[in-house]
Image (cartoon, rainbow, N blue to C red; front, side):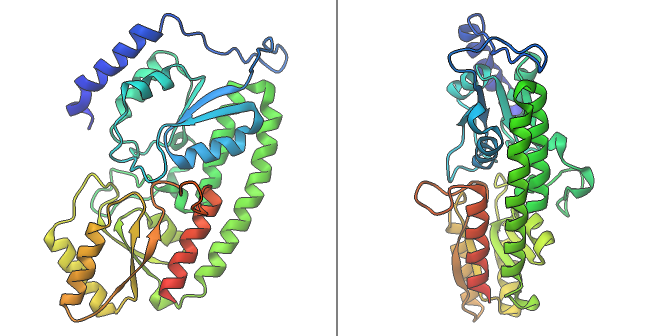
Length: 320
């Protein structure tokens, strides 16, 4: 799926390695029995792709890591194309962390190239149970990458990251595991909060309609029917027939609200709202949900936990 970008990506990678590869030295982390000499800054330099992974890595890594996230709030990872500067950051990092499951769809070849060059890579996909992963109905060969919307599955992601960090930096393994245990407790509390809030919406009204199919894990975990105008990737586009069909569904079910997403332009949902009105029913835009990124500074949704709470609050307040 990366063939059309192959020559451009290959050029970027080759250019960065030519200019930086010869001078780069990786941090030596040692082992529990043979620790490496302490440097002025012994923290692991970690580069992550999405805002969700940047937050998770800060939580698990704590004071033993510095984290550089490539994608900021509101950035769509499905469409993100790495610059030469991004490749340089990853090539010079001690560790690169990415989601996998084709979420970072235009960066796959870069990860492969970094791996062959000996970079330390943690792919969250590798630590998730296959039985928990969802497939889009029209393509059973592809996994839905939006795993963070099921808090229990995000706990598996946290465990996978912790495992990767302890293998790379065993000297600080106890630190990473302690942070994990504390975070798992917080995630259990978050899962309970989402379930309690979801229960406020009558079962027949638990229908979540958004711009793209990012919320299927959420729907399965918390009892919502989920419909999206686009597929699991925003690389696809909704056609007139898609809008008309979903508008008919909304008007027949008399669904109270539909939702825009922070990382997707609102025009498709606004078009859907207009199409519903043309069928004689008024549906509200219930608010903005954070789908493929966390909230920005001063949004009240700067962390994974705050983002999940903001989302469920917006959904429930609009639908109940």
